[in-house]
Image 1 (spheres, helix red, strand yellow):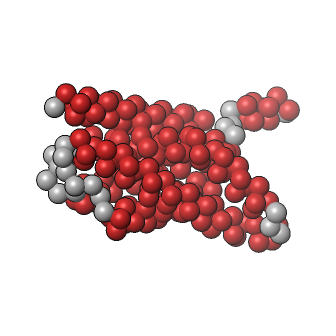
Image 2: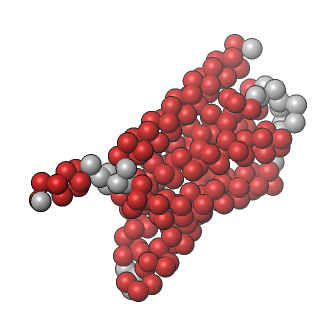
Length: 192
């Protein structure tokens, strides 16, 4: 009996890793859906939708697999301090608020900086402060959704090793495509 329990535990992914992979997947979907919104802010740029959506997905994956681990750990520590009766109901909201704040900052500072560097390379107008605020707010909403969903589905998601691996690989492929497109775009800009 204990051998079957050991095998079940061995095939389970740590919950924080499952949360991070889930959040990365949700953010990738959100960035792909919202890519036209960001491209519409900069008119007549010639930046294609697919390369930009891959670059935005890459930035989301980098955020999740670096800052996201620390953020999930910190929020988990804070949520443990809450009374047990409230923890189950409030934990997804607390995680969502953490994602809201952190990804809003990432969306205000990092994503527009990369986008503006592409715009500067093709002599286009950079995003204005109000446009950067719109991108930051959009990212805040995506961060809330991603962290909220990750907290809710992580216990069951972590038990499905194959699904976690496939989801993680897909996010890494999107990130690799983003790196490829970013290198190609900046190489083109440098030689133009």
